[in-house]
Length: 201
Image (cartoon, rainbow, N blue to C red; front, side):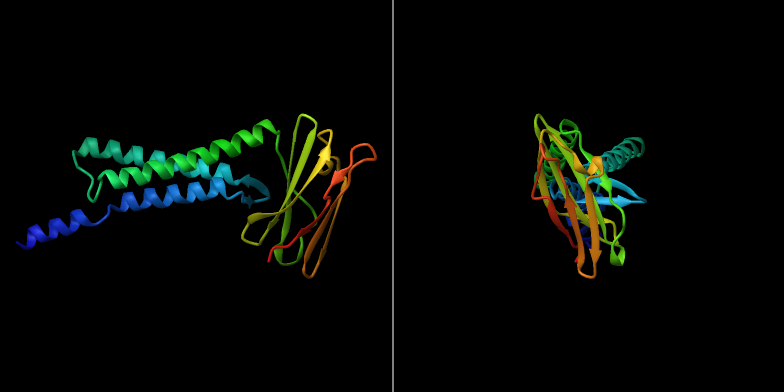
């Protein structure tokens, strides 16, 4: 009797692999759609790339587990019903779509990410992303904290696909409360909203 109760409780308990898969897919979806980025060892990693990496790791782990189960003949413990598969499918679709949208946006716009100098107080850094499509140029600035996680704090546009950051047409100044980024254009290709605040708080 106790053995049957133990088996029922074990079957009702979610598989640790299922919990890991849901958590990994949730992180991948958030990373793909949130618009944040990471700075690791001076390199800028877009959020959609983080989401893609999490998806790849999950696929490798789940594939390895599936092969091991076939070899050993073991069946996975825990609830593997329709609701669990539906949650995994929805999270996987959201993460995959977010990564695809972010990747296509970077590729079609020729995205250029730059970690600007100098660094600010408390390890705060400024990262910019510049893209251009047809005759429109767009830039975004991210405030990156000491943990290396960046969030977008502002954006600007420029005529004729101008990329002022790549041209070095900017000034970055820091104070106790954060930084100020001034992006400049040319007389024929002005920059709109070129004054941006960079605050890591």
